[in-house]
Amino acid sequence: MDIWHITWFTVATAAFATLLMLPPGLFLAWLLARRQFRGRVLLETLVSLPLVLPPVATGLLLLMLVAPRGPIGGVLERAGIEVVFTWKAVVLAMAVMGLPLLVRTSRAGFEQVDHRYEAVAATLGAGPLRVFLTITLPLALPGVIAGSVLGFARALGEFGATIMIAGSIPGATRTLAVAIYSFAETGRDADAMHLVLVSAVIAFAALGTANWIAARAGVRS
Amino acid sequence: MIALSITVRQGDFTLEIDERLDARITALFGPSGAGKTTILDCIAGLRKPSSGSIILAARPLFDAARGIDLAPYERHIGYVTQDVALFPHLTVRRNVLYGRRDGQKLALTAVTRMLEIEDLLDRRVPQLSGGERQRVALARALMSAPDLLLLDEPLAAIDVERRRRILPYVERVRDELSVPIVYVTHDADEVRRLADRVVVLEGGRVIRAGAPAEVL
Image 1 (cartoon, rainbow over the protein chains, first blue to last red):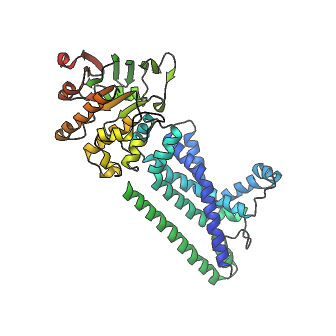
Image 2: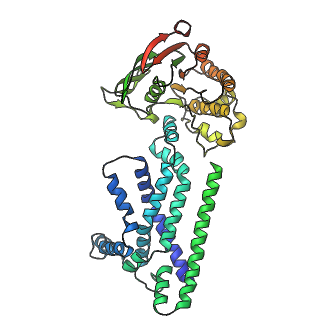
Image 3: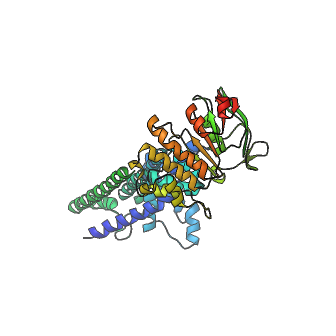
């Protein structure tokens, strides 16, 4: 039974997807929390779109973008990078679907940071980047961690977009969620139940860790 | 030392000040709502005046006519705000050293000894009393080797008894360091004790200015 391979593959791709969404996610969260600019509402809506759009629809849009003849896929193909129906597609689907949760929760974290700390840091000679790295980000950390874990958890359970651009190839793109569906569909109910149990344990561990970290951060500050 | 000629408009409120602040300690004195903190925010660069100029020792920090508006981190102005705003996630030591500039001559030991906070350096901010926080915030501002020090009612948040205890530290900074201070307060006793010159504000306007003994 390839249960360990599926579990390992899902956790690894979800972790990679979380790392991938952190830089743009934190930038977007900070931008939405701290800056007033034209098109802010539009950006906010675009970022949150995967939350409300059917995941399969998001998957289809992604497929059109990264397919070998799509605008992004074409460029990647010329560079020798194949995305569709590979593990990279799994990571991409996970990252796009997890990003809204990361951005929304981190943004709330940034909004809770009192402007006065940033203002005082600036009078002490710290430029915008140093203020962000030494004041804003550490003080927003509970929100950022909570957002990362939510994004990671969302990535773990990703199904709709994954099935569209990565499919369910055993040993290559099959994640827990996709495998549960495939097993149940082919009558392997016991295997499906095993994977449900594994999913529950991972989700429980991830959320527990997040709450523990948040509680520790709360005690320290 | 600092030539201030600014107008700040916000809704119905208009602040106008045209003063040269060149005493060791200049007190901005007046009731709340007089515009004292607004003036400090403008000098520190946290707020943009509607018009005018702010020149610190021949260096323009702000000049509306010439389009100059230095960012706060380019101004070299120490600012102890009313709420002191110590960074809650850093130790006292890292707070105090946060703004230390390369090649500055002021040593950590000298400042911490002067303000008697040597024993607090490894503490965390939540463990400090109100008076200790004031002294740490003062040390933090001094360690950035500012060309000018702004103190916004550094005693407002603590009770009268503790206020009396921080005054000697402000006097030490005045006497031992050559950094000029602009001190905001609404307490006449503090003005008489600390300031060489006082600017009295009311409703956004300067109504009197001069030596404390003559003005108050």
